Length: 324
Image 1 (tube, one colour):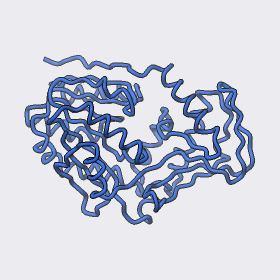
Image 2 (cartoon, helix red, strand yellow; image 1 turned 30 degrees about the vertical axis):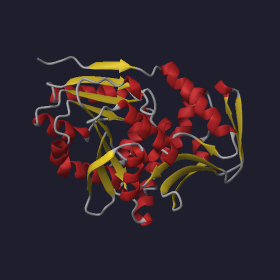
Image 3 (cartoon, one colour; image 1 turned 90 degrees about the vertical axis):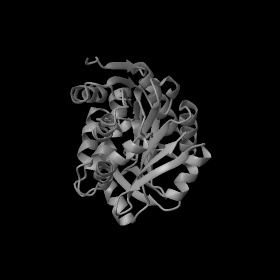
């Protein structure tokens, strides 16, 4: 019998606003300005990111999708017995279709728990998932995967999934904290599946974040529009230039916005005045790329055992399965 999907709102609009206020005050008040990349994703930002994933320069999404297509059956075999798939930062859940299909065919999967900060994205995903996989119990959660992990449901052996290279948005210290929390949440025998970008030629990596059509530039500037819309700020996004570069020391791509002129910005709702000098930069995202041996060490330090990994033929992306 078909089951009605459940959508659990664990992150209210008031909580989201409080988080944004705290991030804007903390990130824009210091000498080195920054904003967390999660604030890219209002409705316009989500549409722009979807457009980015279709650009010729942006290889990560299509590489991961192809990798999942060729390895989904092997992943399902390695995760045999998993009764519940929990996806962090699920978004549209499009790539997860391959995993849901392969795990369902093996007969053990009974429920799917997509978790995302965007309620609209979750509701859209829940609609098609419920139609395509009516046998699955769907428990969607509006939440931030960087906290509240202790609220994840447990209806049998779980596999927690984080795809799309999202892990790369965390600094090494943040990753260690995240892995530690996941390890605490999972029970012995449960698993973690991660999609991560690998270190490759900067001539390939940088254009993926600085496309010729300028879509990524608009996506980057949209974070300022989010602050304008939600907190009454008066940023003029077109007066900021998009910057993407490879930081070889940290082995991550860094996206920044550079003020093209001296300006004063007011965030009315915070009673905050911010001065920008011409040429001053605001960091909006890091996207770490990994070397597998060092990445395995990070997982091991948190108590995980790497069970299997899959990489594309060009060694640009990997999917790693680890056990608790």
